[in-house]
Every structure is written in C-alpha cells, then in structure tokens.
Image (spheres, rainbow, N blue to C red):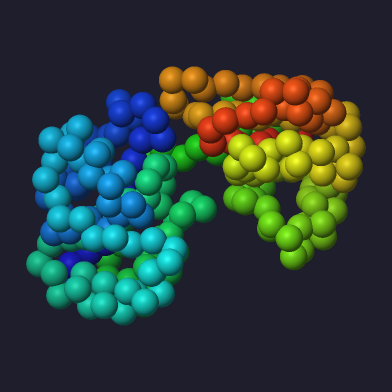
Length: 224
C-alpha cells in the first residue's frame, strides 16, 4: 500500500524549502497540486521532474475516491502540496487526509512554512496561547463571529486578502475596541515583507491611507 505525504512549499523565499521536502518531491509517484502551473514553476527551479495532478477546492470532492484508490494501490507514495505553505491550513488537504486515514493509508506531514506562525511570533503579542481563525466568514455569521472573538482572552490570528483588509480592520475596531493591540504582517518570506504594529485604530487609519497589496496575516491581542 502506498502512502500520502503532505509537503509544505515556500511562501516566497525559495530557500525555505527543506531537504526532506525535496527528497519527497523527487521520489514521489505523483504530486497533487492546487495549481499545477505554480507548482510546475517551483519544481523547475528545484530541477525536479514530477507527474502533476490538479487537486483543488473545486474538484477535491469529485476526485476523492479515485485518488484514495490510486494511492492505496501505489507501490510508492503521493505528495500533496498547496500553492504556498502547508496543505490543509486554509488550503485543500483535510478531506484527503481523512479519507486516506479511514482507508488505512499512512499519512505523513512534513514540517515547513506556514504564514501565521512567523506573523504571530513577530507581532510582539503573546504567542503561548492563541486562536487561529483562518479566513473570517464573508457574510453569514461574520458579525456573530466577530462578537465572539472580541471576548477571546487568547491572541487571535486571521488571514485576510488585501482588498478586504481595510474593511476588516474597521470592523475589528468596532467589535474589539480601538485601543486593542494588533499587528498586520504582509508578504511573509517575500522580498517586500512588512510588519505594522499598533492599536487597531492606528492600523485601520494607516491602511485606509495606504491601500495594501499582497497576502496578509492579522494578529490581535486577547481581551484583558
């Protein structure tokens, strides 16, 4: 029986790839990729020739049973990657891992890049206990979730897209209070990585005047 290996890939800096990740990518039977074009460029830079299979949020349900059978009957192993970071963290992966485990297939997860960890540690806010929220609900349940998290005593971590950041910061000011301490990390591990720290009111004002670009991680201190 084959096995499934989840391989984190660099967020930006190619040097963040690990030796174990390269080894698994080089020796896999096939590689499941969120975007085969993105992964193809990475493999080209690493001089790796691997068979790529498209696996993303729009086809994961349809392909699940077929992939589990293919992995189960393989003599080697399959690799799962996302466009960047660790598969399964706000990216496809959970369904396949659960199905493989249910089928008795060995699942291995390599340690590696995950955007919220460096953002949290660099925020200067307590990181011994925290809540990772991924992306907040877009509409249904968003207000309710904001109100619940405003009472959370642990540090809270979100992912956010650049075109929604200003709105989200404004909402956080409303529900969490303007003086709550926070940090916005942008483009982790990339050339133009930045970290902005201050109160929610200060960050909301700054990004209202300076529209952001790139991938964002928002870290907010817990309620005192």
